[in-house]
Image 1 (spheres, helix red, strand yellow):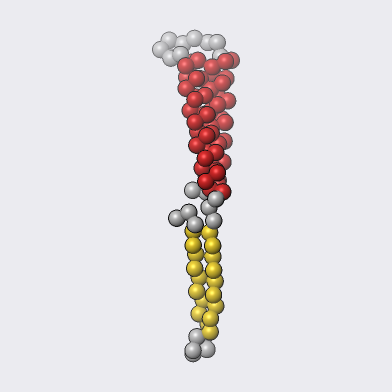
Image 2 (cartoon, rainbow, N blue to C red; image 1 turned 90 degrees about the vertical axis):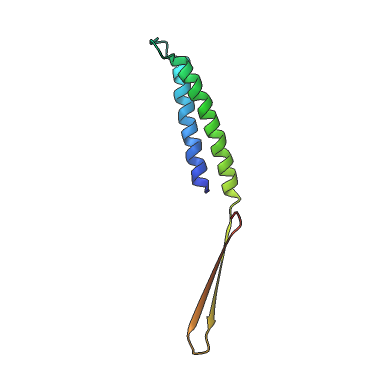
Length: 91
């Protein structure tokens, strides 16, 4: 995975935490069948978990490194041969 995936998960986690906090602490309305405060607590917990997973993915993605080597050689018939090697350290 790449660092962009981690930042997206972290952003989603922050949004879920904000929505969960609003539902848990700021909303005082009552409904039949669904407790809005419980939904807020669930969104808070899921948001914190998503943020932490995103931070881990971001951290692992920063260690990813790709090495590219390019070698151009002359062939016996006077042409050029290009050799490209790629190595991904996390694969």
